[in-house]
Image 1 (cartoon, one colour):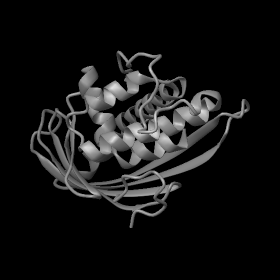
Image 2: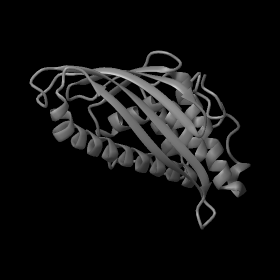
Image 3: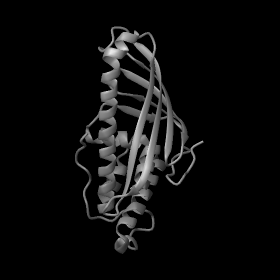
Image 4: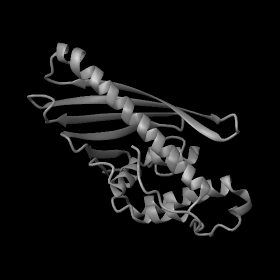
Length: 220
């Protein structure tokens, strides 16, 4: 669903908190402002991210961070720009779908050009690609679960302890809207307060600004 895609893109702390609940990640991501986050990946990288521009079709993020771990003898700092382009359409079965392209521009300090070219660049490119693909698959599965329903998504939302209460409530409202759109015959029976109906279960595992409202067309 484009609505779920945009909501989770604008509120990545929701995705990370889901993974934490499922025991699928050691990563942390905390919102520090309407457009800013800080994060750690659990293996030595710390970063600060800012959503500097956003429309449904284009998001640009700037990040600064540091790394201290086994990969490099000395720690390093760096900066990156992430450019995410999204296209919205319908599948042959007339189901809404979203396709994304991510471009990453990275600059590392105090790291030799030869090391970057021969070792780090191929490894980082593969890691980013794998993480991006797995995240996209996860978001797709969440959207499919919401369309089939159910109260499991609502219960999961209530357990998002690392997410602001208003963001949790917005997630429930967006999920209710998506469910009603996917099930028009049942949509009229949805609770007026945005809660979902009770005929499904919570996801059990993961394979793996103010942009808080998915209807916002411009972040800044």
